[in-house]
Image 1: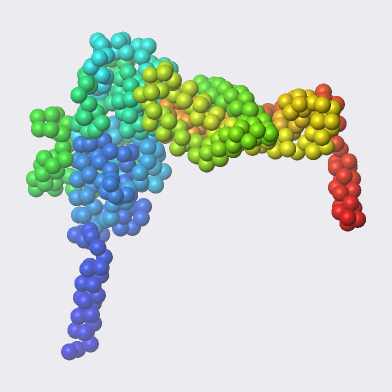
Image 2: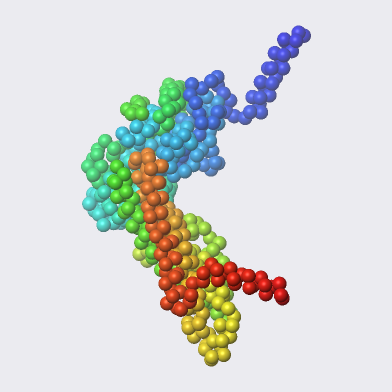
Length: 284
Length: 238
């Protein structure tokens, strides 16, 4: 055996050992066409679970839901380990802006955010609704005046609610806290996206009513009542957003996205899982 | 832009001041009672005070606030207790435990002969406390109370997690809209400094004023140095 053949053999053996010991995921691409904060790791800022859009846990880096399916496929494609940066909704936005996370769990589009982040393709479609108990006589936004209502800090609708409700609006750092307060009866209504209807604790409540919101209600323009949720990427990492979109295209064309939707999406027939795959206007 | 932000933050800061003021007043009352219980001659009272202080000093404010507000949510609602009321109760429970220990220290710092002298005059325990001990402990208790007020103002930011619209919660919402965390948090820090610096000044002035009213002279540095020397000399001689 020549020295070069021996060297090649040892090299191949070393490569095999490295692959065997390196754990998953196995890289399927050579060099990613984008940078991440930490080489070989995709850091995702999350704000808790909001099924079917996203689920977090039980492990510290476990992510699921529609967003999780997409992120895991992306990480596998580029040989990245997923690391979650678990925080509140408002702080997840800052984590991406300040480079603490590569991508932020899906949020809605608005022009202010578009100056700070690149948006990927949408993950799902959601619409603002009002959750009340069946015993509450809801006849429109004005029927909530004078009652305590809850929503979450940082939502695109929150500034409108603040103007409409004033001191009757109770702001919570996390949707889970706001839902708990609502279920406890500490507030009369909970204002959030319709997808919350599909997850506990709201999905478990038999005496819950869901009321649609129309354009102009609460002073909210029609174009942000129904929204699509998009992954957000720091303005300096446009290539990362583009690569995520490519992964999504592949998932669609291979039929794997349908599997993810069947497994983790909203119940069949609901409009949540049918967004049009276009990137909104980025103003970075 | 800055003016608009300040206006929005000021509304939250008013809530911070209201929350801190109510917590301070209640904490002083509860702490004074606990401190008196802890130096009382009755063992059950001392025991109750000791358990209260030990328990509430061991629980983090955030943990207590979240567990009370979300854990007892339905009950709180049934009694009409708002997030603000819950925050005042939680902060009072914990801050009064710390303050009670500080007050106990000031009461116990009054020298033993004062108790003996009062006793020889036929004063009962409650009369001794009221006419002899508390007046002497008061000047020392005032700066302690105002220091606690500063701690309460800062601790009040923790209750933003139970939907009290104090300045931190308002700032977080503003940051989510503007993406300017550095500027906004600096403004919040400035508001805190504007409130807390005068508190420190007031603390010193009130201490001097109360000492004068009670006929207690503020000792000069020279007098304090002389006293130290005299104690050292006594120790050597002993």
